[in-house]
Length: 458
Image (cartoon, rainbow, N blue to C red):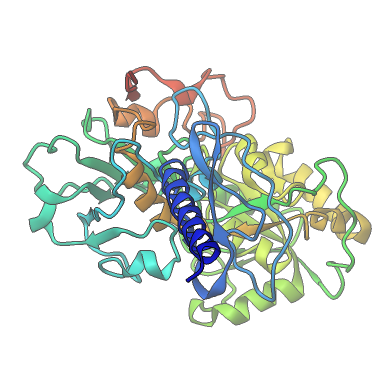
């Protein structure tokens, strides 16, 4: 071999070695890249603020992509992944985009064990299958319902706050999570649950892990001021006014009394145990199609008037079926925070059911006005909030230097159902309303509720 060839070979070896060293150094600084299933876009961790943020230059892994890519989602307003006592922020996108890293513990191969103390919910896969099925960027977690492994679990989830013979203290470092989907009116009283839970997983926006029934995210280029009118007439062919599917006739907010009064001024067809019309749940597809084809308005009335409590009645029964929801339940501010803009009518915007009926008649007689409630179509999309993915990522992240050293709820009863969280019919009221309520101040910042002990970084 000639001297020139030897020199070229040595130079190539040197260049390759330098490249490998540089690559190793970069790996110490940049979070791992995760590939999404089925050839989806790569999610690359980048530094943005105080946590690694997944870029959304491509369609993110948590969005369904039928037929190809779709517009960029509007980025989250905050970079926080953990709740704070005085701030109510939608942290779902931030948590979905989290790839945990810990400078002191580079090895991310340790599997986290998550115990579902009250058993596996219907459809929940055992082991790591749930996380792989959801295409989680961090899937190194294992779900179990075996209480014998409680001492070894990294996190324990209590559904509905049911302890059921828990007589042992929480081991150091273990995370206890309260999981709730029902309102405070329909679950246990947590007054005696003091200094028990570290995290919450509920529909409340200020939960550690917000678990809404749905989440609408606007596109980045969607205007908050003026959206274009819909391309189709959503009133066309609809011959009936108001529909309501309901089986619980004795709710604490007296929604039935409101609907009865409303029916004096506009036709309201009530399906189910509380009415005289029938559409069987077993034939849900036909019922939904009937709503789409026939009705202009749907009573998305919750069984409780509690902050942030917005269920499938609003999304699945109304918005998904091209019908305008008339809502009762959460505070008007809560609907404004999460619903597609201009998509609903809140009963508390009207002095009485009669005034509401007059407005519904006005919309019924004017297709242009009615279609204003569909301007939001095409301005964003409903995303999969991937509860299991976020749970796994956060359990890993809890050990990082960015996470609080400790977090716990000192008075769960006050946090969950303190003054101002829910409203009931007052002495002279026939139903619950947020109108003219006495101000409770910052109801989400009650003393001795959420306690956070921050780390001291040297």
